[in-house]
Image 1 (cartoon, one colour):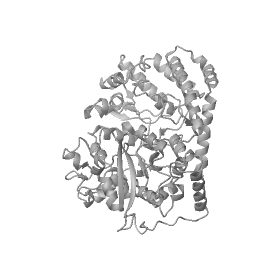
Image 2 (cartoon, rainbow, N blue to C red; image 1 turned 90 degrees about the vertical axis):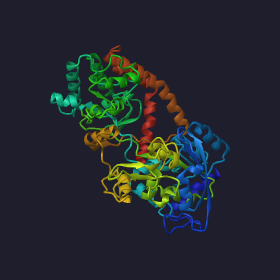
Image 3 (cartoon, one colour; image 1 turned 60 degrees about the vertical axis):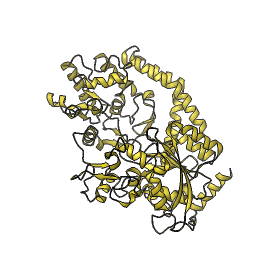
Image 4 (cartoon, rainbow, N blue to C red; image 1 turned 45 degrees about the horizontal axis):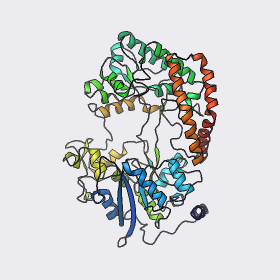
Length: 557
């Protein structure tokens, strides 16, 4: 209670226009060092580590760089991902928290519990000022949704956020372009055109499954739902979504009946597998690998077709419209993540911790967090090979340590010597505040440092992961649309009730959806199905989702 009262007083002081006096040891004249030369401050940090890439804290380049560049005595403990839950619980139960906890990915329920309710996590809201967090402040001012997404119900902010642009947009969906060219068919732009494509493929290849995937692997139904206007990436239709600006649960919405009719038609005409609800992921992957078996699928083609001449026959689909929706939709994935870096409410150095975090929102800090230093920079400290560009290339770069065989891959080199936390998108930013739509600024910065042409990302058609992304850029990215907030907050009681409702409603939705699509249950009973969901509490569940969305909108200001 005392902690919460103090937090409220501090917040009120900030609103009133007062600022905290910077600690005498802090250097406020430049970004680095954060602590004045000749002085040192001890900071304890616990970091998550991927199980596959364990390492000792003393071998991590970034920790040593922070010590030297920031003038802090950084004391680090590594925790393997497999032990994360146990270690986090122990810290919270004992109340013995380090200054910084990074990489554990606390969800919003945990942020509310440990921050808002128990007061164990520092509310950083009072410290998000031009003085201590100039880089973060710029992003928050430019994108109001950031503050709306990181603010807990009590107005506190209990974690450093991450802002990323090239994230899990979707739903991803691919069409066999070589077949379109063979038949002289344009890439479908409407659901009707897509259906005719499936029918044409079925006529040419009677034993085929034109629409690949199943409920258990590369499920295509989320892409179908966007055609009907649902902003969702959830194939089950159970997650909160937006349609025509309103919060809906697709599987409990009237238009879902139209979706079921379409899927039932596909089932009856053999356009989806007769085993759609039982095929496992291995069988689904084999569909595409067999060449003439599918005309469309959600799985990235290169994963099943490793040869360039095979995966290059596929292209990312355009989002399609329908008689129920006249706007192409490609749903924007989460651009803001929370819970990756949190601070102890008992820290003696809140201003310092915020300054440390803010460094990783600068151009240099963002680059160093994601990729480390240039191989020819003194900042390698003799601890890492850094990154460099291929001889004669302005676009193809590599990690020296991986190329020299010290690590099995570039990813392994980065997480084992540069960024040891379990996920790379835990905090910070690698975008340009002046041009945040430039998702390849990170690469341009590397090119500038190395004296290369600033070309940004150049897709290599012979490389599978590049090829599908290139076709996505061409066909889908212009239709990117923000959906239901990917970060929402609920009280502990609300979360418990939501989980109870989902555990009751979701199995019924799954079972009845399968019945409708396969014809076991008549589509004439759809209205009865909606009433069944109401009896199970779906309106209460929708109420929680709607209230969270309204809170998000109010926080936008």
